[in-house]
Length: 418
Image 1 (cartoon, rainbow, N blue to C red):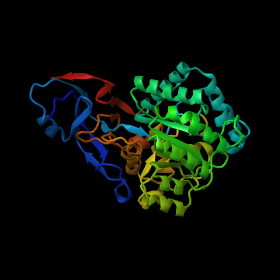
Image 2 (image 1 turned 60 degrees about the vertical axis):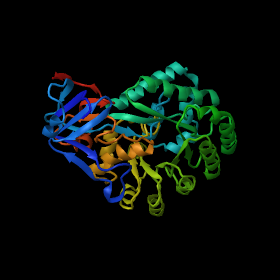
Image 3 (image 1 turned 120 degrees about the vertical axis):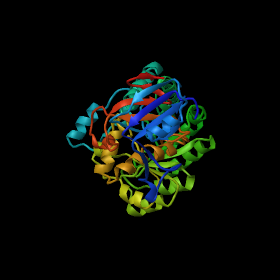
Image 4 (image 1 turned 135 degrees about the vertical axis):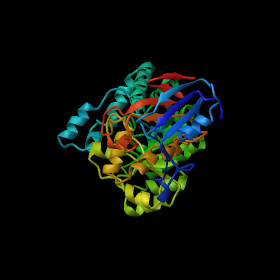
């Protein structure tokens, strides 16, 4: 065994999705459960997971390492949030109040509120202010167990502000414990200075994309009535693919407009939302390698129909979960809350929900060696302050963690063992 730098010893259990890569169909809820368990870490990698005696037998006598007492606790992989919008300034508390009075999200958006109000606030702020906001939002996410996250632009919608957003994401990620994966959401909505979606999409492709592609790993589009239809979305995504960006689609949130067929046609990594996906659409998606990223906090926040999660899972789709953290339609940074909603509203099992926001979400972000507790995987570990791993979703609210470990670095109580 490699030299151990951190040992989590005498856990009630260590729990992780089985296998490698994304899990789907009958394998979606398959877990490896070691009980009791210890986890040995060397640097930023896991080197052993198993029965405490077996793990200790592999550590040379007299070795020095940091240790964490796991008695009465459970170890889980760090959570991966594969759909989040943390790069914004201002808030949408006013929109929230309007919705509480009966206004619908689309009505607020078309009247100049919604995304456009956040665009105005984000454009007005400095890069330093936006960097500080992203840092704050990532800190919230880490406190809820997220150790890797996507971060989308999309609240700038002009050259200077989109690049400012992507630089803020990069800068915040450099100082955050969360690994950040930037996505260029240049086609979020049509800003007021453009008369049509086609005109704005062409501007983004010609003027913004060449520089944005140097700062992002993926590209996304909001394919929806009032934003971008399939022709503009196809043109934008094909151009982004030409710059080597992974493709993502916001689709079927309010209406079916060809997002699934476009995602399959272009080989997109995922289609996200799916609140208004038909059973036929779900079956088509399940037969493809395009992941279905479900955002139940958004459906709750906007009182939308629920995505067909159970059908997608049963038909063999690659199902992932994410927060959709943003100021307007899902002001929620907690993946454990999303897991609770997945179990109580989407009818996924706790095991399926765990896989959906660890191994499968890591797949969506193209992360190898992340999302499992297994030798060779990155040492992103949550120590749950509970005797049963299901408390992660079962406990609705509250601080669940005795410790969070990111790339082998412990945030929480410490002790020294020799």
